[in-house]
Image 1 (cartoon, helix red, strand yellow):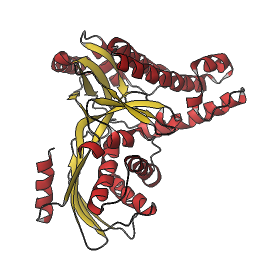
Image 2 (image 1 turned 60 degrees about the vertical axis):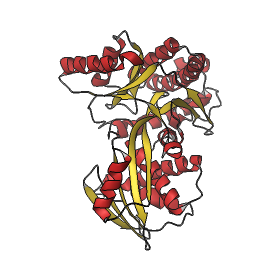
Image 3 (image 1 turned 90 degrees about the vertical axis):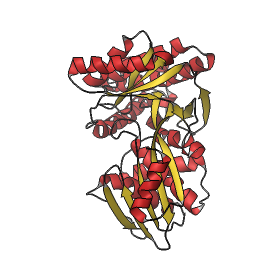
Image 4 (image 1 turned 180 degrees about the horizontal axis):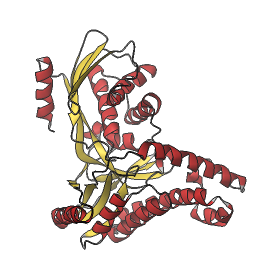
Length: 384
């Protein structure tokens, strides 16, 4: 979807041009999976797939919205924002309005249209893109005094507290703050971040398995609890850790034999993944793409074997990718149990890589994989 398409959709719905048009991107995480809710490190990029909002100020407290991706219209009063049990997708928009008002922002009604081309239920953060785009829409429409980090944290609150999904901060932060041709290295404990340049001779290729992540939400909560239990166990053995972020690989090796084997596996993934992110940033900054790719491969093995959030379809996509001479590294990305893989590929070979992997996936599992050759793009507060 392009800007003109959302403008025309608004005009068709409401009979006039919109006052405000904004967009927020989806994201793909290069490395650092299931570390964000453990106060660890992540390295996402925003991708050139967006959720667009177009809208106009009203002089009452009513919000009327047309959701293009669902072919539906919703309406609610800002004076009585309730969860919608029949249309859970609408709760992301409702939640943003509720959280903004709870934070002391005075909203006014609006007519709006929203939609885009971030694939849903694929691990590319379509929900975060909706939240951030809605935040920026209100900010620009009403000139609210909101800074980038506040937009990310309020968007996360909307998902955690209103929608009820216990996500970390990475998705919203990347959608708001990322920059074109850069990865975003984020410390999820204190929200310090810096931009890491990406070389222009490689492409980021995302392969969508087509498997909806039916288990992702429930298993995400299970892993979250297991990580908390692992921290309690490690503290019992004499460490002083607030989260798994505070544990080094050496410390885990020292006490690991005394831990419950399952909790050890979960902790080992998070602890080693944090180290892989730090090593990956160093590799990118030194221009060592071979090392960076090896870290992606190691991340997938850890997610598959220690954190156990992969699935047969994702493993097949990664195996097919790693067999291609043009690929530097490949792994699953997102919560797991379906969704996408991310692949670092030599740019001149990206289209051929996409074709070969899609054909191999069809042959191996009789399933269709959508493949997107992506560009690292601006977040909502840079390129909206």
